[in-house]
Length: 204
Ligand code: SAH
Image 1 (tube, protein in one colour):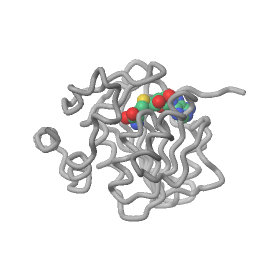
Image 2: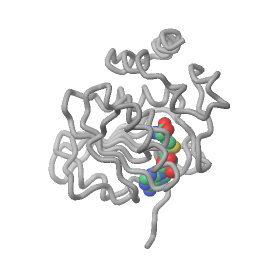
Image 3: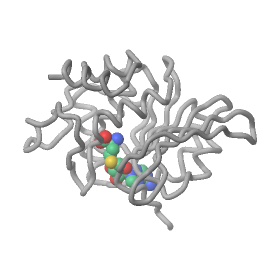
């Protein structure tokens, strides 16, 4: 079933072999509630705890491909959720720092990582809007929730030459890539529209 899913993603335009290998390898059904397990290899998003969703495999593949990962890069992920995207990043040999703001999901997914032997560098409970200054700058940053605007903190925590992939918008989001070209300059590119749960900012 995973091979078929990877084949479908190829037909939808995904070409990065690291990403496709990760999709073929990772048991997505284990990242989901048992009631949806039987549907895990459909190219669809499903509900997880705390009213959140596990992203559609195509979305995960599209975002990861845009990152253009190389081995041992430091990657900041905002929105751990089920941990599936984290697992894809790890499989692509990234050193992952992942942040989740829902305590229930943070606890559940942290335990699941231990059980499965997935080893992010850090799994953090907190507000990803602020990024992770103490471990910055990052080679890559990926946001897996819909952001009303691009958080300035995330841009400032990107290495020069680094890439930030973030869905920007309210009801629907435009997948947006920022490449830091110098200390002060960014190149921005926009891709198709997607639907994510919102990126929420903790104001206090
Ligand atoms: N990559 C995840 C996507 C989960 S949905 C997966 O495929 O399972 C997006 C996640 O972002 C949710 O778990 C939500 O709680 C989290 N989130 C929203 N705003 C956040 C913020 N400011 N900081 C960290 N996580 C946030």
